[in-house]
Image 1 (cartoon, rainbow over the protein chains, first blue to last red):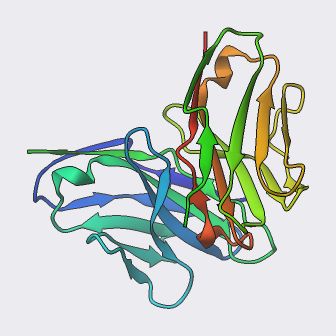
Image 2: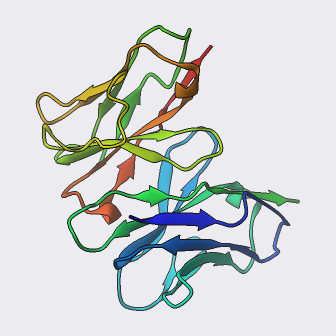
Length: 115
Length: 114
């Protein structure tokens, strides 16, 4: 079974400051890793994913995450945040083998960007 | 392409009443999922369909929850009778071939049980 721990439930930052949202996972098998974003009253949108290959993955809106197998982490970073990045961010994992495609989510981190 | 459609967007019911949610996945997506998102928690899978068959319903409280996907397209999730702890957002998602990186989520139905 897999589990995900998001270490911070809330992260307040000022506009244009850097941010890091932390995610650690536990799994006995290889995994795929994901970050989803949820804006108020909306569904989940895929932000970025790690399937294989380069451990650094990027999104189109400036976020990046690095897969660290030894530390079982997949932290999300952005060098300069905007007001529009205010949302809840969920880290998720899924086994990369064994045929189970179920996503297991962390509890989420609420990012608030203040002017 | 059109997204995953869910209705209603909001529902308020009293405990012990019944309620049903509807989901229409993206056309051609064989796999459909229902997730429950309780406030302050991440989404939790309730049930997964492959076409009209159930693949995983291990976390579905079967004494009160039921779901069907009769023609392998749209799906209905029902709660009967509802409890206060069922208050949550119910998210439907679909994927073309069941791969986790192909999920598309709907906007969800927010259920409040009073």
